Length: 237
Image (cartoon, rainbow, N blue to C red; front, side, top):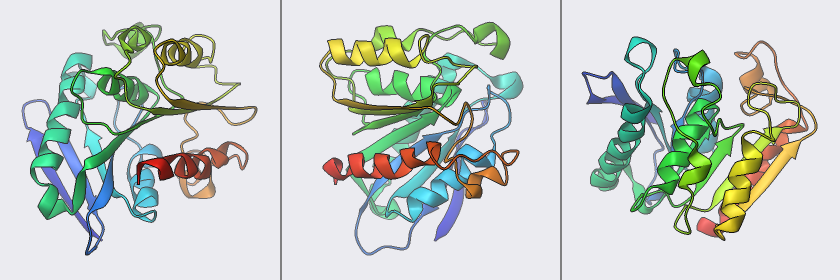
């Protein structure tokens, strides 16, 4: 595996971490948007998620969108477009199939991933949303001005896999995931939903690999989202 980081926008601190598998064939790619309330990104849903997808024959990319004093929802959205454009432009060197690049976002990153997957002419073959923030309920807490991304869904929104926990107190199912999946259903967008009876917000992969950098938070049942997701992803290979 090779790792390198490229600066996409120095003024906003936007970077792309590239986890490149040594491969003789082009692989599907996945762009990872960590959560964390626009504060420093944590390994639990950035590097460790990238390395896990790498073991499943994906080229993995972690987008470090603007955070801290540079946080800005609209700029963060634009950074996703910039990241996809960079990956597609350098697809040959990155050994990635430019027609098969998806996106995954966690929490606040899930809101951004959903927004991008709803944009006209987006390049996401699929979207994966982990306990996503969907509406503006957390804007004041986070210190941003976002949008209700359930209102962005159209018939052209990318096929979506969504997972979360019934006991998520930060982004409750009825306020976030439910309205979004309703919009997907009404617009006939293919989607798969898993709401687990255990686990919670910020559990990432839910296994010990992420738990050791996530206050020992692991849940074997919640962790099943990943193999279920891999099963779902087979349709895009």
